[in-house]
Picture (cartoon, rainbow, N blue to C red):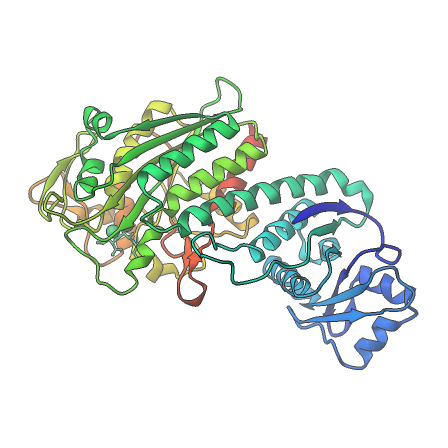
Length: 497
Ligand code: BES
Ligand code: MN
Ligand code: ZN
């Protein structure tokens, strides 16, 4: 799909379809009213007949509207204008795209982007229209022997900015929206790709390709290198697997030379069987998604590079499988992390924190301005927050706030959870410095507390995306989250420095 920005009213535009909004009850948006005037009341007559109340997400496709240049008019319900917020805007756009995709129109003009009742600026409205449209068009059919759906006819979508004085801001929105959509698509593809294809070596290859395409520096550490660095925690997870573990580092440096980098650390467990503490069989296939943190780091770097954001960002991805075997780590085993701290592994299924802790220690060498790790870390986080928001933990309140605000703008929200020292007691071990699990109460918090023991030297935040990185059931598939949140956060950092 090709996007463009346009200005001006809909009446004289020759296109396959003009998309305009209707607020409840039966109230045309400005662009709708313009079409209504041009057609001598054709639209208002239809509304008066009761065919379109304006209920959010409802649609009505009209053909042969008199005295206007476009072939079709699509009316899209927006709900009540006083209740028209981010969520409603996105749902209205999604409904419009779904309906458009079922028509034969090859081109359309979306006027919903003009509606300022949403209380967001034109940059935001355009960016979100682009990401929502791209999301509606996402398919993962590369593992099917043939495609099961035919491609929609829609090829070109013009996004209306209303007044042409908004062009620069609208174009910024288009650029951001496209970059975020491309980053999300990369994260989704990697997440959806099954574990027999998406191995640690495959992720390393993908990082190398990204580096080549966008002129980033890439480094891949092998098992030997990790042994030399003393990454006993990371290596303990890889012991049961036939696939060699990797520690990937990608450096994007487009900021000032002296400006310290933001470091993103993504959990890359390409399949989490639980190891010797084997998971039950039901839905175990979904543990191919346990590398979605890593995928979000790659997706975010792609988005940042595409926008050429003037900032320094480093991605670190510890990646391995977690498998049982005769050589696998056993419950009760004690390992020494790169930090020198010893860990009693009471459950081999709490492996994410083990690979992250060494990656976080490794991050110290980049003298980061901030470190954010992203991980499908705990089932407990899914119980606490469901699939709506990601769990956010931080050792710095300003950083936490910044990420919350970025998530809000990106409609990829997180919720701040506590990291009080009082929880640390749950990690007590009789034999090592501490254990890798803290019992059932507050499982997402104790996992974050474990990581906090490795992040004392920098400002750090942790995103637990176990509930948000993929959908289960009929719509099973990676979501591309939290690429929007992370990219928005970096857009914010880039404009500040
Ligand atoms: N990858 C899982 C977390 C997970 C589980 C994400 C289910 C999404 C859905 C992680 O490695 C894990 O197994 N965590 C354990 C920790 C426990 C052993 C302390 C969990 O959450 O059960
Ligand atoms: Mn696990
Ligand atoms: Zn895991």
